[in-house]
Amino acid sequence: MYNIGKSIEAMRRSGPKLPTLNGTAFVFGAAPDPVVPEALLENASIVTTNASQLYLEQFGVAKPAVTFMRSNMNDGKNTSAMKLKKLEGRETGVLILVGTKEDPACLIQRELLADTGYRHDSLVIIERLDRLKIHTKVLHPATPFYIRHYRPSMGLQAILVCLAMGAEKVAVSGISFRTSGCSFSELDYARVHVEDDLTVLRRITRIDLPVFAVDEALATDSGLQVWQATP
Image 1 (cartoon, helix red, strand yellow):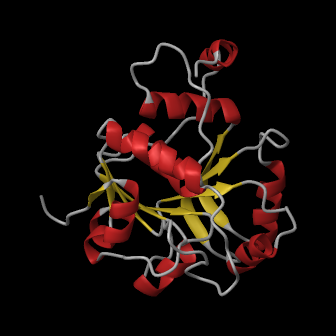
Image 2 (tube, rainbow, N blue to C red):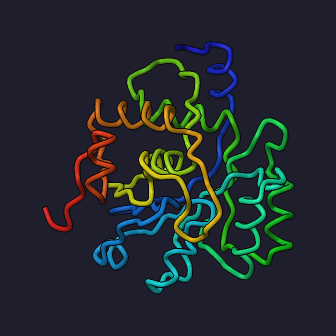
Image 3 (spheres, helix red, strand yellow):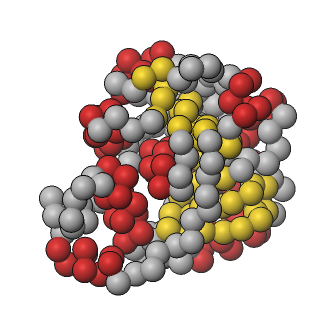
């Protein structure tokens, strides 16, 4: 669906200064029992979502290259409080916060993370219109006007932005449509973006974007090709 009004408004914006990603990006979500290939840890830019970096610490990953994080962890949910607590003293390279209509500059989340002692080398804020531009650029590159943006999970947001940052390939793990829960906590964690995520993944496969599932289950459920360590 074209959104003419938003298209005009978006075209007037300069948008955020996104870093450049070369080679392969390894987007890592928080679903339980993720597959973590050594080749990706060694050769790819590691991109985590919310607090998923906690699981990778056992593999020696202390500081991801990029972390995508939602900006409403003040919602009072036990899962949000748990993530903030567990992120205490951690760090990332580039922190990318996705703003909300109520807090486009992510001021509340930035304060929460500062109180937690979470550190980053640089910060990028992606506002709602920025998402509109990125989604259209990646998923509908031939469209003259901007499409109403999709509402996927942070993992799918990370995939789309990695492609927008120039990643040649995106390998994906820690995203599941079969399980609830979380890889780094026993707290119940329900999947709330299933249909939106599947819509984006179907579009990715339809236009043959270089996105690959690390595990067979995600490949089967999403239609993505399975990532191979070597061509």
